[in-house]
Image 1 (cartoon, helix red, strand yellow):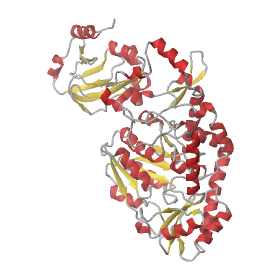
Image 2 (cartoon, chains in turn green, brown):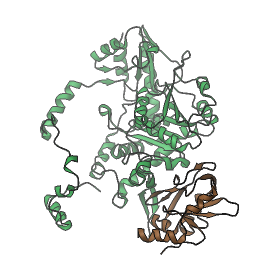
Image 3 (cartoon, rainbow over the protein chains, first blue to last red):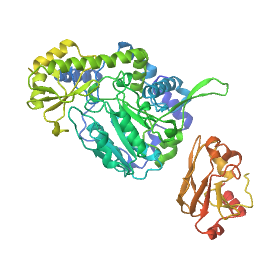
Image 4 (cartoon, rainbow over the protein chains, first blue to last red):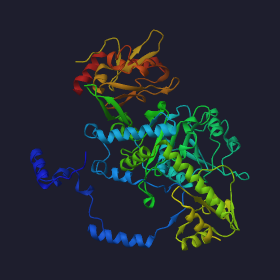
Length: 450
Length: 130
């Protein structure tokens, strides 16, 4: 159902029916002291035309770069059909559904999205999305604490191979809720930018509520997910997987890690048909084992039949949510990222399993091409030779900032500078290549740093 | 008009308690409570072995429209939870005083039962709330 604004006549008619004198009068019961006053220091509103001109001028300043940055947000080609469909009024203007009867189209799409994400991650159930991958990790930590009835420690292990940005956000989300997020330090063996199971020996036998495993990890490397999952379960610890949805077209899904599969899966859905947009909006996904569904945050869409036996879609298990459970709700989120989820669902439908595999495989091949080209340049080395997805760590014989400046002069965003986060790696740069990068782009990169 | 059996004890928060022959007690919610909640879809029972204080929330009953905390009428240790409610939560609506019991306690102090309301006093509570 599209959103169509009310006319002044519509508003007048409704006010007459309920006997109110004006819309303002409906807020009379809010004390004057609690009402928002005009904010000082905010400039006047601009017209659509003026805003358009301002943004065009800003865009010129930003320039258009050839993008080799990954680190959590990935540039993939989005078929034109995706946003042509997403911008239909019924999708584009609809809010997150609260009233099932009036939102059957939206709910059907969300149900299909949930089905795809559960299938892609190899788990039993998905919600209708969260805000982004980073906050989804925070929610997963809280969910694990609620779901793990035997563990009392509220300790969650986050290896340093998990995105430091996600880790920071998870700390912010759970900071005041008595959870303890503990970092497992990097113990890098030669060639290997992954978490060694022996690094977990220090925690064996302790009450640890959950272990977070990111696959591929922040360095693009592939973790030994089976060994890590089995270690956790043997220790009575739940496993939270953080995954890249495109990579799941090639990699074993978390539902099949180890002997039993993981307990909760989260990740960033942006690679599925959502543009980079300077950092957002994106969407987070969360899937889990059915036994934990009542501890899941956010909206969940269900499929049922009406009195006449006809199929219909509903918002289900709402007793988890704050409009019913109040302070004991699983989360304060009462919405989802509907528009981006719509784009992702259409993207996945158009590409299909084969198309996703193509995107993933081509991205890996492009990264290999990039590594081959840049490691020919003296002073540039590949840090970790072990298996990876579409990102890798390069180490330089000069500061990364110099390398990035040289690349910027050629209109190239060269990668994500790791020095502030992992000084122990030296002059390290995280580079990413996707199917969007061409051989010409890669040759330009190698030339710029020679 | 709800049903309030005479052989049970009650608390204001609409739980009932039955003293068994071995001194343990069985706890559930009253007919009035199940009716107010609507169709029950899920019951989160307390873990066996957990200690509950009188008035402490120790279980949750979820219906399609609400989630209600269930409070322990007296202090004690949980010795059993009703497994039938997992597959058939509707038992709580159909037989709130029999098949729909929620958990059993070993009381910390048997005398605490005497402080609870009898059927007549509970019916007075219902009248005053109506």
